[in-house]
Length: 119
Image (tube, rainbow, N blue to C red; front, side):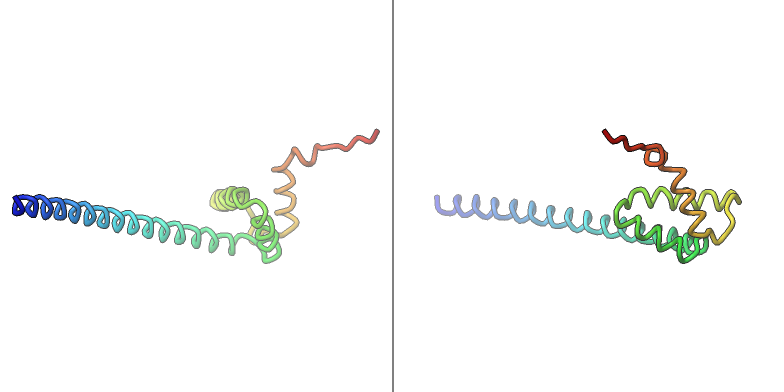
């Protein structure tokens, strides 16, 4: 009877060991995928930033960086739009800060149309 309990216990231990090894392998695969995705995202971001360096003047880049502190999603869409405009040949490079300001003002019509009424 003791031998059968030892056999059952060793079988349970072996099964649990296999489960743990499977979980570790799964975690390692997931971590590897996450690292690869992070590397791809970093590479795309670096390419985007390199393109923006050639498209915008230093003043315009600093303005965009200040906006990114508050609205990072908006800056990403602006960068994409700038790259598309540059690829289409509709931008003169380097784009000045005044031109960027005008482009941003045209995009945010809700703010420019706002009025304050005092009672």
